[in-house]
Amino acid sequence: MGDELRGRIARELERFGVPGAGWAVLSGGSIVGSDAAGVVEAGRSAEVTARTLFQACSISKPVAVFAMLRLVDRGVLTLDEDVNRWLTSWRVPRTGSWQPVVTLRQLASHSAGLTMQGFPGYGAGEVLPTTVEILNGVGPTNTFGVRADTVPGAQFRYSGGGTVVLQQVLEDVTGTPFRELMRELVLEPLGMGDSDYAQPLPDELRGRAATAHDEQGRAIPGRWHSYPELAAAGLWTTPTDLCKFALAVQAAYAGADGALLSLELGREMLTPQIRASARLGGLDHLGLGMFLGAGGVRFGHSGGNRGFKCHLLADRESGFGAAVMTNGDNGMWVVERAFAELAAAYGWSGYDEPLDEWDLPGDEVLDGLVGTYRLREGFGFAVRRLGGGVEVTFDGQEGMRFVPMGGGMLGSSMVGARFRMGERGLVFEQNGEQLECVRTN
Image (tube, rainbow, N blue to C red):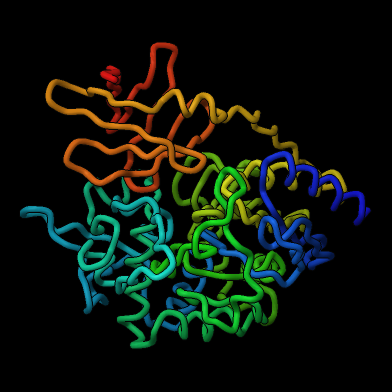
């Protein structure tokens, strides 16, 4: 089965222009295998192995939440009090005369109403901001500050910025740097010896790390971006270590001997808190840190940094699950197909996820978007090609990268806006409004 499975996943890598992938598989409450296909970097011969390091991207978040819950167990924190009680280096800011009250439960379930969905990272040689600079949106940071602009607790709103707030809470209340704290609370106790919240990656680990690649399968300059937003996107790890983490979540839910969380908090972690947009594996609610499906029976999280895509999924009743990690911007196409292959190979009961159709625009379509446009009288933007997407420069602003998302959409990690490629041309969508883009050149 191993050679055949590896060959099928390797063909998907070639089809979607992703150089490499690694995966580990859960069955019956244990890790039953790990494997890899492809290469660490396009054009080079070094192959991906079971110990190749990938960026975990947003799967960094539930691991950070697990650490937070350990501090709740110890009585250091509570889930439902205002986080400004513990924050000393930074505080959730006022909005006019209103002081938002945000709780750890809301931060962990993406219902705190905070801004900053994701982060673009920093290229090789760029100065990295501190956590407080990220939260304030000042200094060398390349994103806006974090604030509440919707009512906390009312609805799901994915916020990497909220997870950075959680990071600052943990550092302020313990007085311990986040990287060190995560080693103490999670990574070392779970035997996740190939995992580290290290940004930038230390020299001694660079030789084990996969290189990030764009949509065209080309290596990112400097090999990858760095993410000082550690809790939100900063974990380097392997599929096997992610499966160790999934087993720890299962153990906590079951109240197993030696579990790192109490039974109460293990159950809270996999109890639906709020409805969310759907993820691979039927995950359509948020627990604490984890996306959940089937009422919390399935749990997991996906992740996407520049040039890395990955997904973790486990089923606490059947015991099946897997972590799949890739080093290309088209990696989610590979990830969902790899999960289908693993489900068939290992006989996962009840896993029947439809595969998304490959409908991303090619070079000819993207080339045809290049030009200048008017959104309204006196305000417009210019489009030029950039890698596997486009760069959009709005009047008075720096350029922003928009990439194909499927369904004829172009999205950006910088702003909550996107373009739809309609029959009559581009349509700009933001804040629930749609504006036709009038081409001027």
